Length: 321
Image 1: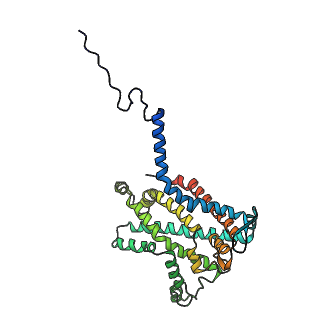
Image 2 (image 1 turned 30 degrees about the vertical axis):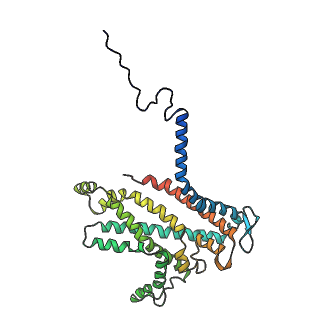
Image 3 (image 1 turned 180 degrees about the vertical axis):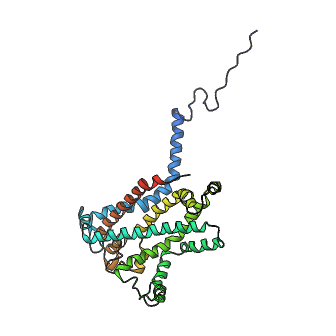
């Protein structure tokens, strides 16, 4: 008598006869729609926040940039690209040049200086924790507080800066009222403000370097500068790239220290693009929101261009572990 035939059961993920699977047929389509609806429901709070605080202000700025306004700032007639044509002037070119110099001399020294300090702190010296805390202390200060501190430091009569110069027989310097010195002085204050954050980021990057890599390099004779240049710095390239991108964006948006220390002066020597937007829209009773919005659009384009260039050039040298 032949053995009975065995019937293989359908796989667990296959629906019984007459029903559809999860990924096909009417039932699968209903499941996909339900999952998509749940996803959009979870995204709804974020979409609302972005719409209120990003998309709507951006659209409003584009609208105002092509319209004139009355004395109260309300949009009036359509003016097209007139506000953009007004920026084709030597005055606005000077604002762009000041913005470029401020960004360059507040980003590169802050990142490079923090890298040097972190590499020195990684040396096996006593009291390294105290030094690391002291160097990271500027991160605890707000922009307003740090700006007030530097306003006192730069005071020509009682400031610490001129006091130190006086001990070496150097005459007093008008740090914030001399057009040739005001911008470097504000840049130095900005570097100090960003120093603590940069050190914290780079210190975290150094702590994440595998110790066996460093020990293997030491066994091969790599010490000092060779160890730093061949091992530590390449492995810190993601953190350095992050700091350069973020610091550039923050520098282009800097306002507080300029307003507190110099108010864009002297003789417009520290008037960056952000401060020019403020002057057009709010300062001295002005309400030229159309011109200010056009400059804000230019600032957005500059930030996007800088970020794109940095990602296109610098990211190629980043070594991701």
